[in-house]
View 1 (cartoon, rainbow, N blue to C red):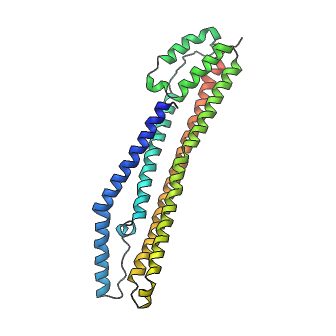
View 2: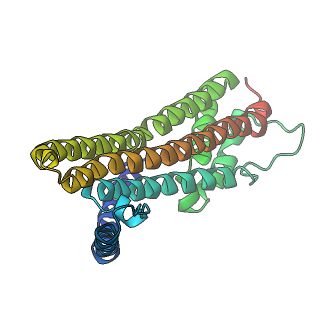
Length: 266
């Protein structure tokens, strides 16, 4: 991937993070926290009327705290990054359906004939030329034209495929970091909630346990939401990795069947 594509992806990730923050925070401020406050007040009123009343768990109350908001922001950001990478992998696999080097069965390409096929690849649309398959084919044909050896072309193609596989694997590290950070944020909420509950232990000793229970709710709810989101993200990461691995395998197979086997060395 060239520096232009890298800068575009960096800008995309930055805008995706900013948009995730705006959307999630706006939803929490306008919907979640007002609804949670209304539910809490209603439940407190019901408990005051009936000491045996058991309040139902409300999703608004479960997700209302700042740690859960941060988890949802990171979740949307991870979804945006994975969507981009999945779309890129799908575009790469679509190109495998095209006959970029039209050859009949049994035809052979000599080093002197590579220029015509290189021109065909150079005439591809710019959006296609930046994809992996045309770059591998161009590099392999250039190497074959220079050395005249089929093995050199095959090695060049294989090296580029391995390099692309390593790059895709390294770029997943950001998503894996997000998947690790989300449970950590949940644990921060747990520590905050338990700490706040302990600070109100003297009230619990006097018979007022409302503050302790509310802060323990923060502790457990933040961990619950964080672990749930982390499970979803890790599942999607594995699906994305599988898609990329299939793309790499099919690209190398395409190069072997549609180019390397048709080369005739000196």
